[in-house]
Length: 623
Image (cartoon, rainbow, N blue to C red; front, side, top):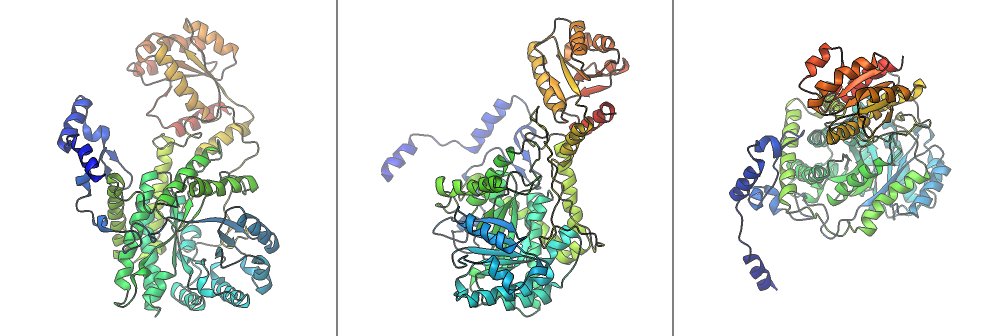
């Protein structure tokens, strides 16, 4: 068999990188290779259009094996299984228990309970966990940060009372004061004091992680991938350093840290992120370990959560496509557990239907696509291995910069982390406004006839799940968690709430290909604000088009033709309309200055800020 393979490959001559470049350069016909084909990412490095075997030379991860230090290729070597988690906000423990038992029979094998600290007692916990086999399912708990030690004590007592072998139980308790500082701007607890008590109290639960690094809030705030990873490493290192200085053994601290990462729709980048994360975290932990400590303490325990940042209120079923590719990235990258957010999470409390779809998205990957069978299928990919190395390099630079400034706590206290991530949030909102970042169904190809039917963006919840708002003064800045679609949604909600839906009429004339292309562009452009759009096959004359537009009672008339023909059609059409509707030219013709001199003010094309332009139109049309 090997001989046949060798003979087969020998039939094809090898092609050098230089030969490929010569062919590409010829096909570009003088266009700049760097400008046309090299991707300048937001992560601080460029991505080439193709990679070859020689691009793997010198990459340290090429010697890594699954299940072995530095765990880049995963913590396991036998399979790629992960746990399907569904979270439950506990309002009533009996109702939460009934729901938990139901979803455990529907494919879930990890539960996340957000419990109210004021209600915590032995009876509450017994009711919540009744008939749930804690040794068969992963149990994860979150509550107000000041009550995590109390919660841990109750859990240990409950499990001992039920007769469990505590060493076989898996789960987590989310103690993450730095996360609360980032999301709420409020400092509530002392890291070392509470963290040390929590680790000591939960020591019998050796399969539990009780120190949380919730980097998913950075992803939800629009952070770039290298920022989420770099800050997560500094975040985990802060807990590691604080507790080891308090006298807790480094291996014990490291084993107690759970990383929660978000997953964006940048498919291959996200796969690379998780691989780089495990490698870099192993490097950090190794520096703390004693000579006789097992390096298994350097394993990064990862829970992945699909992103909120790119969820949309309009055309919300597209969210299923976004979260599906995100789940694929996380699964292929070898995370230990995952939560897929319901498609309606941006505007509604999830119901049975949306939760069932979210569960099934993971189950399809695991049970039908068999993503759980192959460990690190990305290993050896020229492209992904180079992405892994590049993301690792950028994240490591950020980690070192944070450490040089005094560590993650100091950076959060000073607002430097929030400032950097919020700047990324603004940059990404600007990219969405200009359609450099596409949100299908929101800033590009919207559903022309969709109405909200009462849907409104959903506000967040407090840390204990109580639903109350935080009105206390802040100790530091907080993250801006506004979703990428939020401004377009506000615009469209404004249009709908006005009770007046502007009507945009496409006056198509002249060159067939150009008028059709520009009419389609203009329809998509204006429908992003919720306007009614009327396309047409074409008119024989400007006057015929204007008459049809007035007969349709159009609020907007969009002239759609070729650049050359605008010199002939635009001014007569504008004058014939005589201010009875807003007049727009679709494009940026060479004669634009002449058209402006004639009084034409509105031009829409690929270089304009779509959001700002539509805001200006709303201000004029919705008076």
